[in-house]
Length: 201
Image: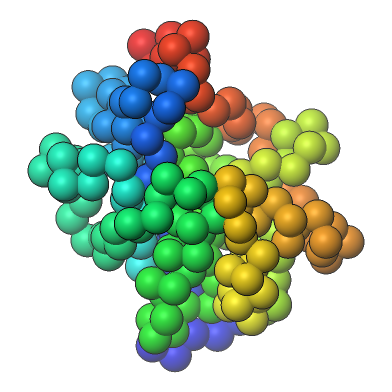
């Protein structure tokens, strides 16, 4: 690969390891939306939004997810420490990009089906250099997806502890974040509770 700032290689990193504790232990990757697992929908969102290569981090029920979901063309990493929180999955996802030549990673969460390819494409387009840092915003509030230039990966991974994911890093680098308004094309709700499942119908 010979990426340039004009045509960057922006890898899609899908965090899909959660066990759905508040959903009675139903792995989020396997929740169904329009007849197919959420993980499939999220992969398609990243692909249609212009990301590639595509890296998926699984955890809870990883073998069942592999068996039931079409992850063709994806690099799949299984995070054995998924129960310790999202931080471990973010670290695993960034580590899986080593040697790929990617200029940036665009991170999406599997349990946000209201975020589609248009929001992904908008955040991807905020890439300027390997030091880029960008995030979708919803009425001015920072959300997902988030883009990390490759020069930031080591520091992002070092700060990704417990269930906070990149939150600590993003807070510390608030002034460097390019916010990309997406509230007109996406909804940033999470599927966390049994009540939230109505959003998948």
